[in-house]
Amino acid sequence: MFSFAIIKIVRAIITLWAVMTFAFVFMRLTGDPARELLPDNATEEVIALFRARWRLDQTLWTQYVVYLNNLMHGDFGQSLANGREALTVVLERLPATLTLTGTAFALVLAIGIPGGIIAALNRGRPLDQVMMLFCSLGYSLPNFVLGVTLIFFLAVGLRLLPSSGSATPAHLVMPVITLGFSGAAVIARFTRSAVLEVLEQPYVRAAIAAGETRRQAILNHVLPNAAIPIVTIIGFSLGGLVGGSIIVEQVFGWPGVGRLLVDVVGMRDLAVVQALVMLFATTMTLANLSVDLAYGFLNPKIRRRH
Image (cartoon, rainbow, N blue to C red):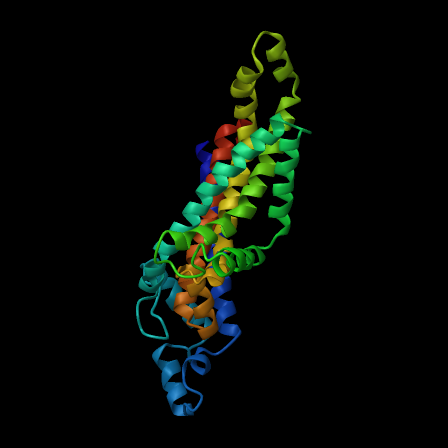
């Protein structure tokens, strides 16, 4: 298990380095921050001074080495827009995103796993059909469409909930539903398939034939064995929530890091964009790493393949 974990951790570190390098190069090759941040009537002398102030006049390789060295010392650079520490700018917005994604993740687990199990145990019945309809809607409905629909009915039509902002707990309701709906549908569909597959295994029928009740067989054999593939999809769903928060925060004016990313990309505020990319990449990489380690822990065959 130790060597398996080391391999996975090394791969995660390489992935983060590759994402960091790609973001660094891509942002510098696709536009000039001086032209975006300075007024249209800025003179060439002012533009040159701006580039020299932020070392944008140096070669790409020199900038990369300096950035990498600073990053290894915990320095994510300064915002080109206001001179503040990029990490501070990001951390100020992080609690709002953690509140949104954390609540949505709890909703995904609370609906997805029980819903999938109930659907599997009632295969072919009306309850199963309702859950499958829910899953189909979750798969096919984009986040922004659901968000706009909720705003139209609940905020504009019925005036039950605020349409944007984060001042009260009521502001959280529609963003959480929008963000968690598709994730819950994915988990429910996957859980249903995993439970059905285990239910058809001979050892489950043998356990029931040996005297166990159906409830005991489900608790002792079905759910533990179905947990392995479910753990995998839960990790991927967490990564999907982090990515989906960018769109949901824009739709509902939620003041998190997703909305910040859209703003700073438009301004080409390089240091803040890179700090945000590292934050998203680290979150998704850690989620995948956790899934890999949990999968290896639960299934010894996976460890032996590595």
